[in-house]
Structures are given as structure tokens and as C-alpha cells.
Image 1: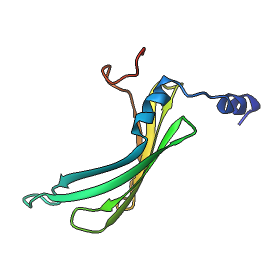
Image 2: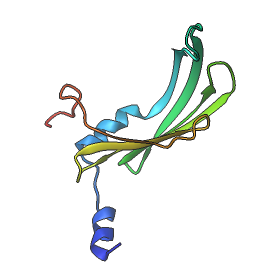
Image 3: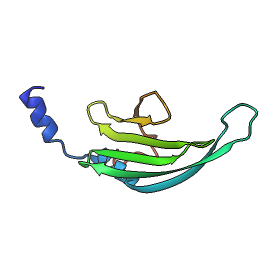
Length: 116
């Protein structure tokens, strides 16, 4: 990494899009249903997630819960905004999956931060 890249990165100030993400900071509890097999009734699950800010540029969310059908689940998600790509970006991993999810997207106009 060059000196100019290091200086640029260390000088990054949160933008409107980063500030918009702060609405997700807090403790969240949710319940849902999932059909685990075709033709079988849906099973319920519950998770608690704690999301905290990371330097004003990122959100780090850690979740704990029970899988449908039983068994513990732990999840970790990151969310941020890449001003160069003009996209929200993030990742998700869970103790019950081998896949590393990578997110990249934009908000619909009615969700976008004011002034954008």
C-alpha cells in the first residue's frame, strides 16, 4: 500500500451513507419460519443480534440463536459503504454454513439518505 493510499484511508470521514447505516446499531431479536424439507411444516427459529459501529464507517453484527430443528447458530455480518464504487458492501458468515456471503448493492430511492 502506498503512502498516499495510507493517508487517504486514515483520513476517511463518515459520509451520509455511513451515517445512514448507524440506524442498525443496537440489540435486535427476531423470529422466523423456515421449511426445512418440501412437504414438511415450517419450523420456527429465533435469534438475537448485537450490532455495533466500527469507526463510524462499518457496522459489525454478531448473532446467536437456534436453528430450525434445533442446534445453536452463530453469525457475523459486516456492513459498510464504498464511496469509490458508490455501493453498500458487506459480508456474512454463519456457523451453520460453509459459504462466505459477499454483499454489494444500492438502496432504492425511497430508502436513500436525504440529499442523495
